Image (cartoon, rainbow, N blue to C red; front, side, top):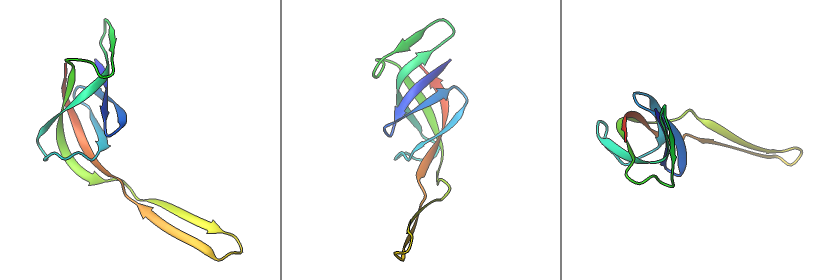
Amino acid sequence: MYAIVLTGGKQYKAEVGKYFKAEKLDAEVGSKVELDCLLVSSDKDVKVGSPLTGVKAVCEVLEHGKEDKVIAFRYHAKKNVRKRQGHRQPYTKLKVVSIG
């Protein structure tokens, strides 16, 4: 059984017992958060909604952190224009406890 959950304007595939990194959430480490489900698939059927009523994915917050640095470099030949900028996106690592 898996679900497609919505958080931070993005969609993630969530399976019970699996981990995923989402956009940073305002939640304490060790607390539980409920996420809206857009799709739930089991062995027998598939339910789709926007979001599904009465179906939530309960996740446990494991840690907060930053992704690897991404370098944005702007360069114009023969113009002496060089601009280097780095970015590290903050994230929250979640473990799916239950779906339903």
